[in-house]
Length: 402
Ligand code: ADP
Image (cartoon, rainbow, N blue to C red; front, top):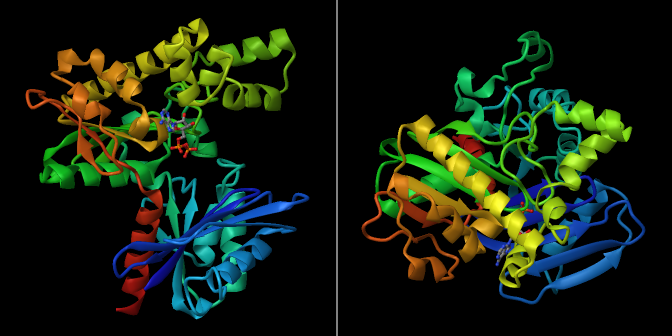
């Protein structure tokens, strides 16, 4: 079965076409600047060279039409006809309390995703545009939605509630939902597989460190706590997000600086984190380069970033009553040797012992970076959120057929 995985943003569509026979990627690509003056389409058939086109793509239905055209193109295509695509899987950021797992797209699922627009105003409307665009182009193909929040629906009430008047939860669903769930789910399962141990026996702390960053405590294969909250702003310091802060700062700064709600939101989401402290960049590569060159602001940003990561690892070791495995994934988690070294340096009280040589090895494969004496397994596991979406879509669509 061939499955098209779609990740739609407000002005972009990322895609990957999977052949589920061997879970191989036949082609992947990106349509950017949808609705702007010149849209850019980048298409990469596996094993062949990448093609880039600039054209006018005004909305998502036209973007998906373009993608299907490239997938079936006589020169750059990888399939003979769009009829070969038997299912479409969509990444959706927010599933609220409605979805604790992936679901087939039907009228009910679409109504629920729409009801969640308020909770994810930037993301869920874009996902809905992706779903509608795929339906318009492939009306008879089953569609599946896979949610970033679903994995965290197992969090207990004492972890997901905020200590604020409960009416806000009942009326407006103000609670913690978390994010990066497909990644934490994939990585924790892959860690158990790598160690050849049942996931039910493992206490795992999963660190997803990309532009956005979150950390999750996984017990018996289930998320019991995660650092992102009602929105992805809570938790760790990130590329451009502040992470945890005293909520009283918000009204104080709004008052002192005469900021609107949108302005303060933008400050905390887009102008904080590594970018604000370093004054240079939100990109961990530039920060660690700055540290190597002795730049004081980059060094401070790196200290703050890794200090907060260690504090979360400590708090999740407490939540789990111990830890067997710590995993690193996503852009910085998979690639930054110095970040992993710095985080693990102060975890000796947990019995963590990093093997510096293993930490320096670069490969796209799951690997151990802790020493043979370490009481905690420290692993680097490349994440693959698209594969989770393809697998869930495959499982749900196969269920329809049987
Ligand atoms: P996103 O959250 O956008 O999916 P990614 O998981 O792709 O992000 O991570 C992107 C971030 O990963 C970059 O901003 C950069 O900070 C970091 N990164 C990527 N490669 C490296 C590297 N070699 N060393 C350090 N950091 C890296």
